Length: 138
Image (tube, rainbow, N blue to C red; front, side):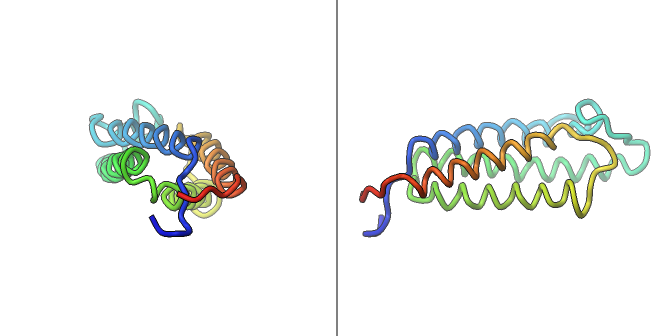
């Protein structure tokens, strides 16, 4: 680590571990359920463009699996990247919030909408905690 770097708090590492497990779980659902969870979980009508919806959710799931693995790897091995990664994850969530509620809202409620809000609040709180805590050199 560089001279100005410091170790991330246990709170930050725990948040990344939980986020990594959530990303692995939801990514696996999207990638491996026959309907990518669109019908059986979200209740979307798949009679019009269902194959496209399923494909797109499966592709998103592959990315979520990758993100989950990166989250866990950073939390357990490459801790110097923990705070920047949590910031990136928060930014991704905030973009998701904007898409879901402002620019491209879903025609119906979907299971992840409350998770987007809760995840954003928790990640923002952890980042505030991380930057507010007393600086301790590595």
